Every structure is written in structure tokens, then in C-alpha cells.
Image 1 (cartoon, rainbow, N blue to C red):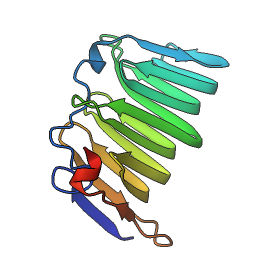
Image 2 (cartoon, rainbow, N blue to C red):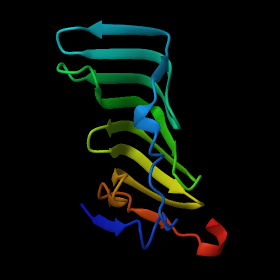
Image 3 (cartoon, helix red, strand yellow):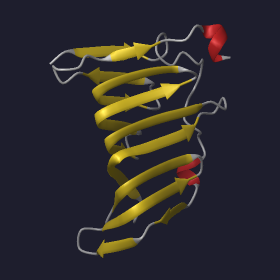
Length: 164
């Protein structure tokens, strides 16, 4: 398995201080789906069927979304999204959109990390990276993209003038 390590500050998503919108975590979470299943013992809610999740500028669309909450304070710990292609988007403080898609999305709210598996793609400002797995630390803007040995990691970098 080949691994590509990139720091987004100087390379892929070179958008200056493109931190995720800082007020998102303070916003309520809205979820629409065809059905939902609540497991009170494990503090897990599963949403099935054309699921849309919105929190501030964060949008997740998937066939199935699982939300895990902390038993101590009820805060959302993790969000998982599954689908033919589940999508994730979020505005950054500088007004740009971070967009990702994959068959599996894992968003760890506490660590502010997004992990995308199977047909993963992450883009911002016309630049994009594709691989079998992408792990993106949103706040620190660090990314690791892996290939599956069959298809290599693919990157498109736009010149700085095209991103503005």
C-alpha cells in the first residue's frame, strides 16, 4: 500500500488560513431521514434513507448516518455516513468550501477529523485529492491519503491565482 503524506498549508488546499468555520460546533444539529432508530443504552441514533444532516455550515448527505453521543453530557462525539457516495461539505472561516465524498465517512467531532474510505475525494478551491482512504485533520490542515494498491493516489493542484 502506497501512502502519500501532504501538509495542506503548503500544498493541496493552499488557501491561507482556511480553518473550518469556527462557529459550527456551537450550532444545533438538524437531521432528516426516512426512518430513525434510537439505542438509548449505547447513546446511538441511526438514520436511514436519504439522510441530510446540517450543523452550521456542515452538511452530510448519505443513505445511512449514525450519530454517537457522549453518555456524560449528550454531546455528539462521532458521525458516520454510508452510501453509494456519502458527501461532506463545510465552509471555512475565509469563505471557501471544503467538500469530500466517499462510500464511508467518519467525522470525529472532538478531534475535528474527517476520515473517508472507498472512492474517497477531498477538494477545495479547485484542487482535489483522490484515494482509497483519506484522513484529514481539519483544524491543523493535515492530510494523509492512501492507495489500495490497485489505483494510486491522484492529486490536482490549482495555481494560487486560480484559487482566489
